[in-house]
Image 1 (cartoon, rainbow, N blue to C red):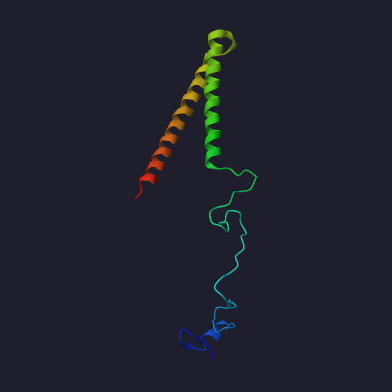
Image 2: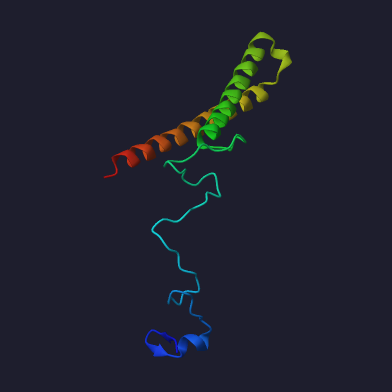
Length: 131
């Protein structure tokens, strides 16, 4: 008769079957001290340690996101410069409101980028100084 936590007959009443080897886990016992593990996900640790290189499909990362954001800020700055240059060289080709809007967009994107970069640097310093 099987016992569960010292109470006879409880294991058979709740449906736990005794596996070979005397354990009531429902799993078959494994001999030896090493198990063969299979790596199913490329993000798992490699056999030699460390993380393997991700696939060639080019998954997004933080660096790519920051570079894309910087490219957007640069594009707004260039639009502002081009609008201001067009206003100085040929005032009839562009409206003053469009120049003002382009300058405001460039200024706002630069301020947001500066704030984000300051917070990233502050977070990095906090991580480095954590004891």
